[in-house]
Amino acid sequence: MKAINSLEDSQLICMYKKGDEAAFAVLLHRYKERIFRFIYSKIRDKKLSEDIFQDAFIKIIKTIKSGSYNEEGKFLPWAMRISHNLVIDYFRKTSRVKFVSESSSMREDFNIFHLISSEEQSIEEKITTSEILNQMVELVDYLPESQKRILKMRIFQEYSFKEIANIEEVSINTALGRMRYALINLRKLIKENNIQVHA
Image (tube, rainbow, N blue to C red):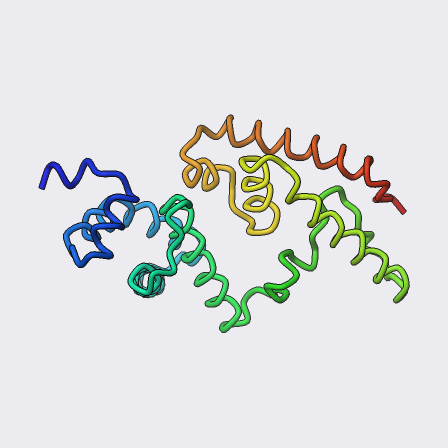
């Protein structure tokens, strides 16, 4: 058992796909506490958190067994993303938090550089603002991968820097630094593409 415990996540997943249940048990043991803590930090209810945790791992198991899991990605960020989506689903169902559709990829109050005024906007202004934000979301994809992931987790998914550091397996200072460089680079891209971000 000691040998299997030292295997990489990708190796354990390959073994599990071939029917080795013990391999998945190692993955579960490796990450269950971190994933449960993340869910509980959002829900603040132990029983509900346990239910969502179980749902997350059922979804993880089904995805791996169906062959849909992308082995190029890290297991923990992927598992965290599934957990995060289930938390969002819970809040949607209970109407405790208002979310926009997944297709928009961001919150209604999204304001990376305080772009949206709190004052009432005309239809034309709303359309213009929407177009600007859509362009900015597209520009995010041109950032270096590590900066892009952190910016999306922080702004679009509302993770704390502590959560981001845990997911990325880096220090909080490193996460903060990557976020800072992501914003600097995004500003450069906005300037290069002549996007007018100020009213």
